[in-house]
Length: 328
Image 1 (cartoon, rainbow, N blue to C red):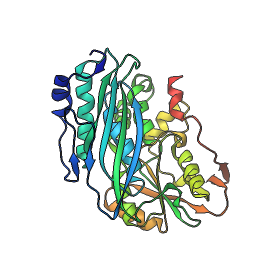
Image 2: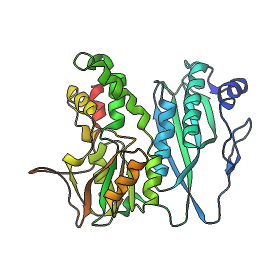
Image 3: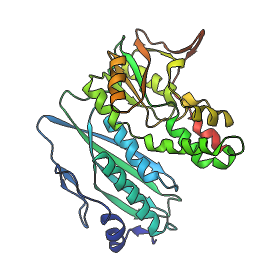
Image 4: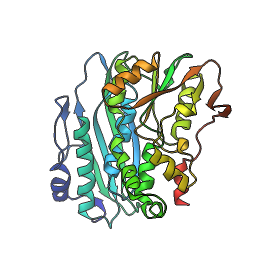
């Protein structure tokens, strides 16, 4: 495609034709010449915003771009309502690439009950791969916002799903040929399917209803990074038991191939939740088909540790995610 704004005819057939209006609280939605969107908000509501970019060429980047931003909104206790999408493509990109990305975005929005509210599409020789920047907008009742830094000493820590969730899926997808030299094809296929668990919107809704004091989606740096961050944001100590952190065998075996620490591997789709009664929350999550476990608690002081039997590991700020080892 030529450098500049995506032509109106391409915009109509590959973007607008795929996007559907589904929420009555969205008042102005995408259209030719519309530079702004609008949504209705009640007098007792506050608006919540999150933004993150995704860069890549693989199928699935549209889906991921929606999930990581909707997850941030849900982690605050808010309901994701809609997204604004800024998409920049390189000149060598074909219209089919644009159509596929928008298809992924729209299908993911549909699954979450949210809406594409607006955005911008452009072709630029400044980029070599598609760049998607999504801003997600949510709303929550006044008093219902749940910060990452809401932990109090004594709160229990619940983790949903499994350590290294997203990273396992990425490695299985991108390094399948290497993995097939030592691992069964069925194990690799199962690991690839972990991409279907990337949303934390369902567990966030359950946790908010159960009185969660803090929520944090587990992204770069893995569960070790998330434990540090939730403690740092809250000004509390952390004590977690490594043996209680849920992890899939597929993750263990794939990480061994690349000498990766699975507990420091990006884990979008998993959530860390602080609450007064962790076991009760685990039960409520199980009723919704969401696996979870109590892995520790918040403590007095500033020490953040993970115990493994007689061994103790002191946590620090997250460094480079373990995922990047596969590219060296």
